[in-house]
Length: 320
Image (tube, rainbow, N blue to C red; front, side, top):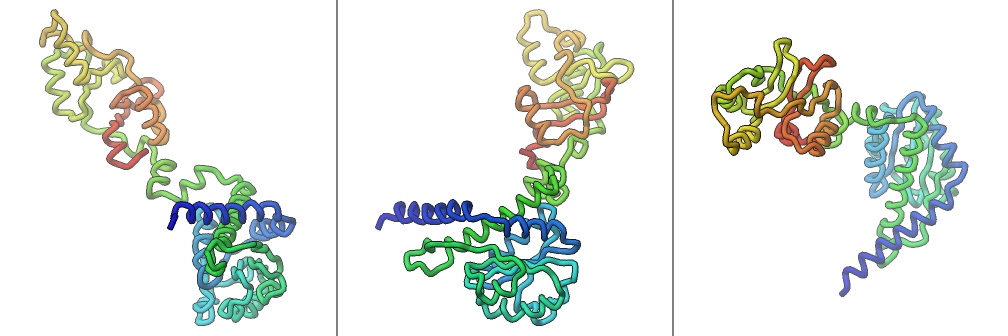
């Protein structure tokens, strides 16, 4: 059996389903977006079985992109959770056939709240379709499963239409990366969009020396500082340069090297620094990688040192 061919056929069927659906988007979709956009309460999504699982994902997507939303299981709704509904809410009901018994049983109760009901179903004349104020049709020529029965193409399309609604709402609200970051403070996305240089930079016990410091003294300070670098400053604590492990090794290769030399003789003058501690840590990492450095010095506008950010700190904190 050629599983590769079967997999390709499955993907082609589902992809074609999505392409076909794209040509069928009509004014009803626009109206659904406007109804949700004007919602003063929450967007409630409900459904059972595979439709319910798709609904859970849709609710999570809406909630994380600026539309307060949650999933309501029809059975739980009949046993008290209907109290989560409010007259200011909007409900999306999902049922491919439109005749799901559990979903159909709560529709009259939802209508009592006089809230807009958006149905997602293949049949506008079904129970769900006729009870809905708007119907987004799930048009599928063929399920991808070999017996044309298991929800495959239909669930893929339903999920994609949910994504399309969410994207429309994001654009309507001018939803930005900063907004997204406020909903995703943890995880890789949150770290990339939310964590700033100020959150990670080291500000205490910095290995600071002046330009007249002897090399032998600088080596001890570099070792004690555990950053692989000493910061060279003037009498006003303004950054003049850096003395790194690499600078010391290169100095050792010179014939005139002496431990009694002043450190400024071998230092990196005018090193890379930033004066914006509100820069995203992910952007700082890009800068560090582009400049091929390990330590980024953070100063104020007058070049006075405020802290340092080491590449190892960024890696340890999962910044990428």
